[in-house]
Length: 375
Image (cartoon, rainbow, N blue to C red; front, side):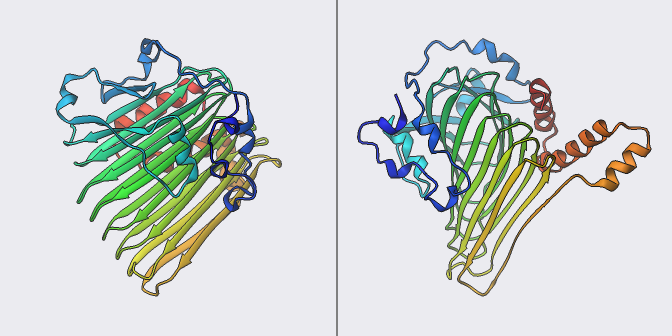
């Protein structure tokens, strides 16, 4: 069965090249693939024990169920189902055709270790719809891990809503190393007054990876900071699309994405930030930096600002180039081979993003995941 054949489906929610953000990034073809819509039961999570880490609280998210084994977490976490919400991002609505409820995880207390949400998928030529709201009532660190060696041409449509209560700072990291799959992550943020969300996204390996951010900054002194790395070294396609709207005074958005593209890899950076006249003293920043490692790799960068107020700070920019020849020459002059020198420079670019995460245990964990997946 094809997604476009679902009964009562409003096909306008499926983006085509007629949609501005997708003019240079065609994903409509994945909705016309023949896919299996049955959820695979009896997944043995023991296969994924290697993703657990003693420095974290580890929970599994499998078949739209959260599995919590650690008894100490049950006082800090509340799980319930809630009604499905609307979003500016139309693909967010797609999951409502499979379930009218969304799982909500309420993180009620500060944890003494980061919370690792391990997302487990077992599928072949399947469509997987998954939705999770995370409400954060206390300062915490969260890492979401998406790792499978082979999903065999499956399509994942994942919804995430991050809601921060007043005066909260949350640090959320996400590492994706899904092989032979297409993953669409629809991210909605709700930030209350004086709250700050620091979000780090690391995308590797997926045949197609699309992140869509929907954020309305409706509370004073709320801040959204997104740092991301996209590393595509074959024929993968990646995109980061964001709709950011500043509606209240002294709100901040800062979106920085680095791309490392080789062979026939393609990437899209399409960030739209709107500052309404009610958002005095807002700050809106966008930046795309791309390193092209082959003549066939492509980047389409579209930073966009719409400003309706005078009292603000705003900037946007996009740069594109190759590896620094002076740095290559310096390393090679010290007896390092050219290939090794390139690898060292690429890793240093990645580290600039990974070091935005100030918990060493999370950085080490990401290094281990990268090593397992050879990325």
